[in-house]
Image (cartoon, rainbow, N blue to C red):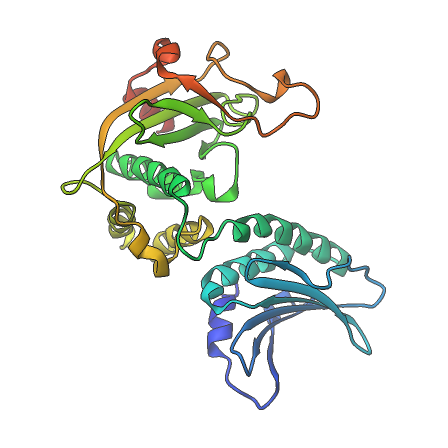
Length: 323
């Protein structure tokens, strides 16, 4: 598979306003990695026949990216233009995703449809990126997921299995999917903790055979704790002997908005006070889609911990089911 970032980095000034390199690995399509010779900004261009219908995308923007169509004498061009150079790494992942999805297409129309699907998925991801770091809510969400990943690695679950199950960056309803087993992670530092459920899909078992929920109760400390940065370092260190897995892990962090330039925002230290493990079954108090009136969605709610004591399980039940 072509590495789009390496192509951009290898491009040299030619005297042209736009430096273009055709992506030869998808020979049935006219796709190009391009660089603006003046600004150094990356572009991706897909050229299609004039009879292919490109939806109205002129001046279509999301954070750091502009997308537009352009008509030449002989073709139509779909242009995806990076307008914020701080986002080069995540932009490269975005375009890489498009390339991987269109490689097996058989027509320009199919390739365009798949490209637009990727664009709309990634718009949601770009819109969550904060240039002053992730919000505290998102930090805690990622912190909980990394604690779980670290725990599974230490319990000798294969790292490729762990990383491929980590669906949080893909905006799945469940944070982890191990085949037909889902795991949802919660973390709170509240002095009056509860289970905060953000939508009706999180505890829905319709698409899984088993669903577990883990709640990490943490408190802020000044020393002898862990931070978001330290967990990233710990996991990276455990993956350092396998560069492919380390690259995959770093890409997932980017998808969640964890940027190296924002590391100074992620040094708050915590320690774990308590961990609760739950088995989610039909009797667990929850709101699911099938219970909601038509037209109501994205339902958030809180569950008192005292109401779910009977659903607690031992941690080995989860790890054993994942092996």
